[in-house]
Image (cartoon, rainbow, N blue to C red; front, side, top):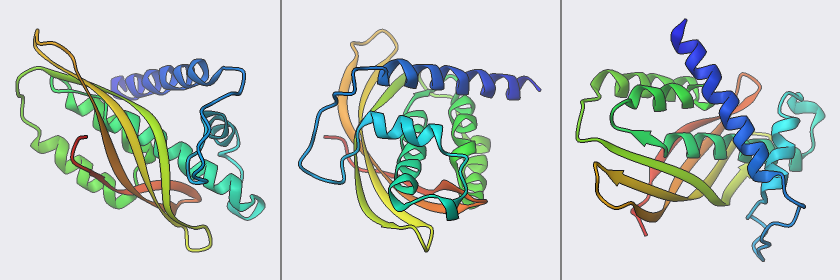
Length: 183
């Protein structure tokens, strides 16, 4: 019951943070690449995520997929070595059934290390493929990550998380997550 309460609080804080971050005048940085998506379109996708697949056009499905990708990436990339279980628990709602098994195994095998805290914020998205009818997509989420170990200075770097997305239980889920080397 405690875990459910903690997860609920984390989800609520994430939703509020997402609202505050995206509550601008609508002007986000524009990119020539059609695969880069703005925060406003992700917020709109979060608001419409409960709509069924057959009643939604491709653009909305894509935005919903990217909203899940963003939430997963930011949570998966925000880690405290003192409580790795919280990170894994926070991404479970966005993970496919197969990935959940892997994440549970990671939780059981996690060992305490030196105190390291890393926070991540999504900067951009690049869609490699989007096959709505097959319920598959590949997306790269580029994150700004800030890492601090003990009392050392904060290290800021850019890292990309490659995600494979699938439609499962009538919702977009992450089935594979793989970090690229840091930039």
